Length: 118
Image 1 (cartoon, rainbow, N blue to C red):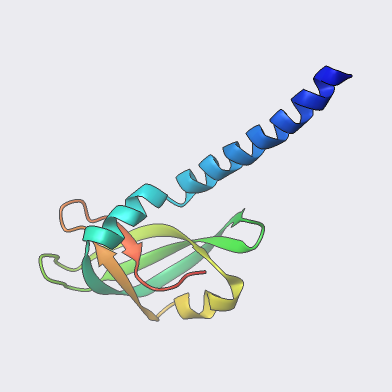
Image 2: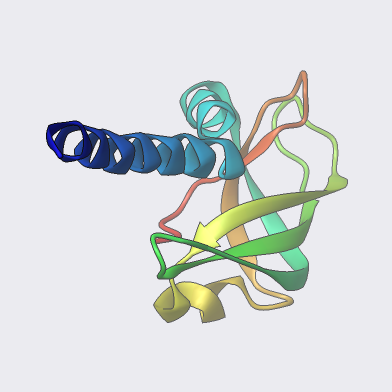
């Protein structure tokens, strides 16, 4: 009985920690943080959107965006895909044809959204 009282809270904590690690991995949090800090500002046109079916915190939609990155200092125009968490309230801001702010790492062409997505 005493062992169960110890193991159940430990299991709950382990599940919560694992969930946080999975969310950070799914949202590429480390790459996004680096690109937001060091990347060049640019704009991108949304070419297509796709709901991946995944959710973060049971609210935010994980949406795959096909983007055309416009020219920016040190970055030639190119197309890319990225997956970002978006609040359903902000989903219209990422509709096909919309222009969004991004930051781009010229060396790796990693892209991060440079506007609120939540």
